[in-house]
Every structure is written in structure tokens, then in C-alpha cells.
Length: 404
Image (cartoon, rainbow, N blue to C red; front, side, top):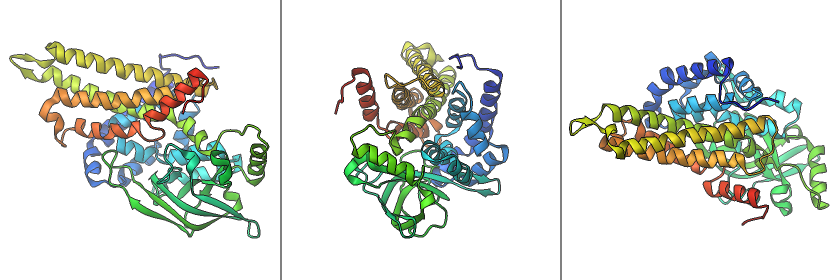
């Protein structure tokens, strides 16, 4: 079992320097443009694909680190460059997480590469859970999947919302209810391949932040997929549903299995935003002079920067601990995964806000990146489980009580 250590090994340091260089030289110079355009940054994704960052091999290598830290390191550096572009690069990994969590080995081999494509022939993946009336409460999903035994097909109907790459993805992973009476225990995940009739993009959302990442509704209207597109297979699904109907404990729910695997990764992205804002504000405070001295010489500024640094480093500790625990299969007995996402996301909001305050009027204009970082930070307290949901998970973990 890999020991937990804050001392990076040679491979991890090399990864950190490589991804940081890409963020510094490719992502940051383009960040303002793509935030303004509110479009998927295809040229940046293509550059990332050419050097191997946008690829299944990169994802597999990073997640294959026995310490669990490599992907967290990479995500921090990408989000340090720009959170919106980071999401555009990593959005497909949500679909991959859904396939990995619920699919058979054969399904993983078939579908995961189709979430990335190759340089010159890029592909996208999307993971669809949230609905207009089912955000944090995944048990309220209304999207239905009905099995047509005669044709060995599943018929999907419903509307998904807030979906990264929704409607433009080549491969959609859709969580739907196969037995509404069982609530969240009656869910299953389905692959909707490229070109399938009955799936289309609804409203594309104009967002406050991470605007280089495409977010939209996905509408399923009598969308038929082959039986082989049920992740895990029908036999496994039938066995699971039978256990639930008999009152036995079910294994991980389709949506929850994905969220559990990705929360520390969300925290790592929030950490990257917070670190970027802290570093920018620190440099500014050293250079900006008022009343004949650098403003960092004033306690009001110096203490604020001290608090920012403490929170950035504490966030990294929580993220790395949670990722290491997941990689070494240590149970999250106290909601450690939720802790990392909760603390890092709220740190990103607070640190970017403090950075704007330190820069004053300069921090409030859109040409300055701290304004964009603050807008970007807020979504991290909302998606993949709001701060309130994270606190609920932690509270249930530490108390053993089903708090509502």
C-alpha cells in the first residue's frame, strides 16, 4: 500500500512541471478570449490532444498512480491556468467515470476511447444526471428507461439539465430510472452513442463562470439504444433490483458511484483557482505602492494574504488525503471526500473575493483575471453536490444518524 506523503516523487514532479507549462503557455494566454466567446475552445483541446493531455492514456496514467495524487496535481495546474478551459478538457472524464463505475470491462474498452477520439478527430463525452426537478435529490429523477424485450432495446425519455458537453458530446452516459418505485435504488446508466435518433441538445446556458465549458440541456424523446448499452448488463441489473425488492442492501447507486469518485477531483480544480488568485494578489501587493510603501507592508493586507495562503494549503492537504484514501481503498468514514470538495470550493470563493479586494478597482474589471477567477469559483460550491449536500454527507458520517 502506498504511503501518504507530501513529498512528490520524480514522476509526479515531472507531471506537475509539464502540465503547469501547458497551462502557463497555452491556457492562460487564451483564457480571456474563450471566456468572452463562451464557446468550447477546440483549438486548445486539439493542442492538449497533440501532446497527450486530452487522452484516455493521460487519464489512465494519472488515475493509475497508487498514491492517488497525480490526477489531483494535474487538475490543480490546469485550473490554475483557467477553470473554464480545464472543464472543457476534463468534462469527458465525467462520462469516463460513469463508465468505469458501472460498466463491464468490455464496455469500458469499447466506449471510453470514444469519449476522446484522436488528434484531428476529437470526441467528447457527457454524463447526464441532473434534471429540472432533480439536482441534489437524485432520487427524484424522472427520466425513464423502459426495456423493449422484443427488440432488446431500451427506450429513454426525459430531460437532463446542467450537463457538461450536453448535446454536443459524441458519447452520452445517461442515468435513468428503470423502476421509479425504488427511488434512487432503481436507477441504471446507459450509453447513448453518437448519431442515435431521439437525443438532442435543448437550451445552452449562458453562465456566470467557467464559460469556456459548454453546459446545456439534453432532451431524450423515445431515444432507443441497444441492450448492450446498459452499463453493467441486464443480468446484473435484474439481480440488483431483485435484492432491493427483497429488502436487501444494494450496491452503489449509478449516480452516487460516479460522484464519490470525482469529488476530490472537483476540490483540486477549486484549489487551482484559489492558488492562482492568491499568487496574483501576492505579487500585486508587493508591487503596488500607496503612501510611499508597498501595500503588503500594511497588516490589513499582509494578514489577509496569510489567511489566503493557509486556506490554499489546507485545501491541498484535504484533497490529497481524500484522493490517497480513495486510491488505497480506505473508507471515507468521516466524509473525507466531501470534506475536500466542501473546503476547497468555499476557499476558492473566499480567496478570489479577497484577491479582488486587495487589487481594488483593478480587480473588478474584466481584463484582470481575478475577476474571472471569482466568477469561475462559485460553481464549485454548487455542482457535483452543493456545499449543503457535502455538509449533510459529513454530518451523517460523523454521527451515524440519518440527518435530513
